[in-house]
Length: 107
Image (cartoon, rainbow, N blue to C red; front, side, top):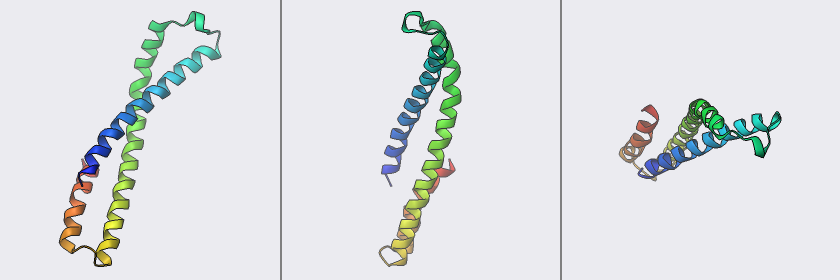
C-alpha cells in the first residue's frame, strides 16, 4: 500500500494549513470584534497570539486526521475482506495487504 505514505504526507500539510487558518481566523475575529480596524493592526501582538494558538489547534487537527486515517484504514480492510470472501485474493494476499495500513494506525 504505497499510497498510504503519500496520503499521510498530504494530510500533514492539510493539518498545518487548517490549524494555521483557524488560528488566524480566531485572532482576526477577536481583533475586529473589538475596536480593531485595518489601521490599528498590531502585527507583533498578532504574531504572539498566533504562536499561542497554533499548538492548540494543531493538536486538535492532528487528532481529527488520525481519526480519519483510522476510518480510512478500516474501510480499506473491509474492502479487502470482501474481496477475499469473494475469492478475489488469497488469505496470504489479504494478510500482506493489511500489514502496512495497520502499522500506520498503530504507530
